[in-house]
Image (cartoon, rainbow, N blue to C red; front, side, top):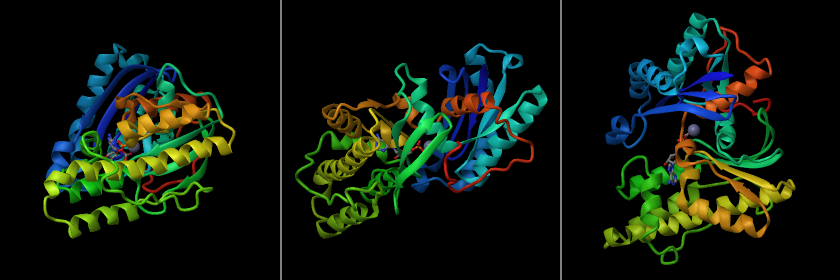
Length: 336
Ligand code: KG4
Ligand code: ZN
């Protein structure tokens, strides 16, 4: 079954063709980083306009690269939410019209289900049930995943998402937007023990997160010791990263142990973090837990993961009606 996936929930216009929910035939991503960079964050109205410009060429590129003529598509899958409403509407309206014109089924997909299912686009996917840590710019959540389309929330951040904390700390340090990858790179050059920031475990037996405290701690450090900041940036990045990664790794591994799962997936933009990947792999191995992290391209927003979920939804008869609308805020997952 050939599914065209479309993703426009935030600042990436993406389209992909995926066979049977696991084989990527093409995956195109048009990033808007350059557009939003001067503002230090995503400007929703600019993002929507850029999606309108990009959607047709990106879909055409994805189809061309896949070698699949549009007449051979079996369905269209598109992100329904959560995300920026104006952005979502561009992909959503396009997908409805495209499916209508081709007379094939289409389905709205929860973006979070997309991230969780991104591990099935890799050669060695987890077996059900497993635990997934989803860490991105908008979310930091732990799920108990029972099938491609069913997951229960075990805990989530009470304030900032992990990626949001990275982006805000990068801004404080004058490193630009988006901050995750820059801090990750700098952290590799710094000493994580020179400036120690607090680990916010909250209740160690529970699976909620909080990242606003560490963000404030970094800010306080910068205000208190403004001299020679430039020379300490790498150490601050390393100290901040160690504090975030310690909590993410601890809670993810303990969530898997609590549920008796031998498989743990780490997904979302922050899963690209080298420090997190290393720590989770190392600590989980000691507990006999297999870790599944998608390759870099599949950590950030992409349309292949949306097509993967779309395949399972359409196979289950969950195609959508034309009057379905987008949604901006989280909905409980399951069925996805
Ligand atoms: O999943 P994603 O592309 O978009 C959302 O759904 O939010 O995640 C984007 C987030 C941003 O906050 C970005 O700073 C963060 O992922 N990120 C990273 C890294 N690469 C991207 N955070 C930490 N380390 C990285 N290497
Ligand atoms: Zn995302």
